[in-house]
Image (cartoon, rainbow, N blue to C red; front, side):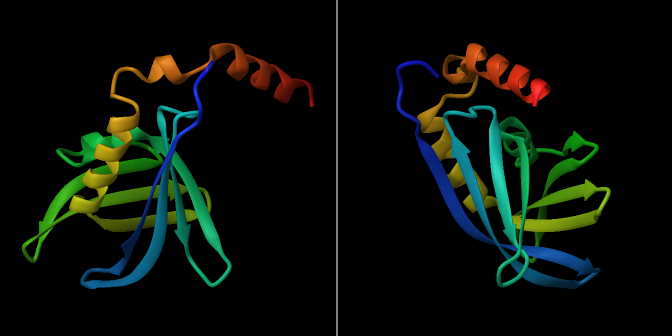
Length: 143
């Protein structure tokens, strides 16, 4: 992004890792959105005292998943209502394993509202510097 300062929006929240039907464990997490990567949400799931797992997925995917089932493959997101609470399920798949997480819909919506105030949906291209991205891609290929 040329000529603009980078802005970061973050949100700490408590997710639930579903370990079996009716059983779950808490997972502290942090969501980050940066104007330098305007299409993505970076998620860090704290799985132990000094261990964490990082994922990156599309901001649009998270927004769509608040309203209806969205995504395919490695990341899928969909809304549910359980015990009178609106939740969002986030299913993650990788060669190392699978995880089903539940997040409070209200907190995800608040986080997305704050990201939308920084970069309106549909205007991400204004914050994306294609020259920098191409230079990085080409540098990675020569390393």
